[in-house]
Image 1 (cartoon, rainbow, N blue to C red):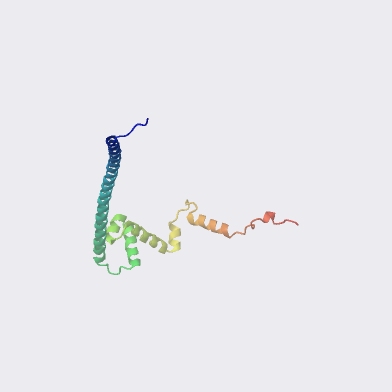
Image 2: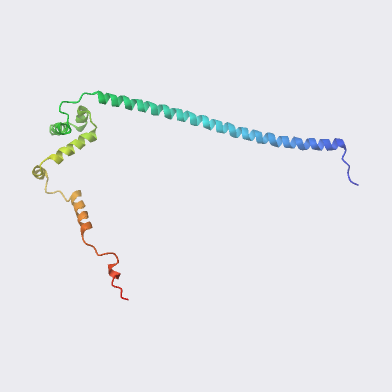
Length: 168
């Protein structure tokens, strides 16, 4: 004998299957909703960070533009050629002024002041520079550079010369 399903039992089994399917679909919907909420929170956080970065960048550009306008508006000193500036800076150093003070007085950066000092040193006559040098100084960078350049120009044995005398 085969068990016979009554119509009521078949309907109950069908409803049970539909109930299980609906529970699985609701569970998947809840999980995807949670993922969407997490993604929405991340997007909101990134948007806030991007707004902060944009505002900071804009404010920085405004400050740079204002500083450039301020520096561009200052009147240049009479005879403010590069050579005259270099002479003024060298004279101030000889008087014992600090580089920071010279930089603020000339409206230059400290590295520009040091550059002008280097230009002044390079412009001095060779005999004056040689008198200032002390004999204890060892070889400098230029000596090493010259040695290296001379080593490049020396004749070298061509590659494979040791094996060039192959007899057939």
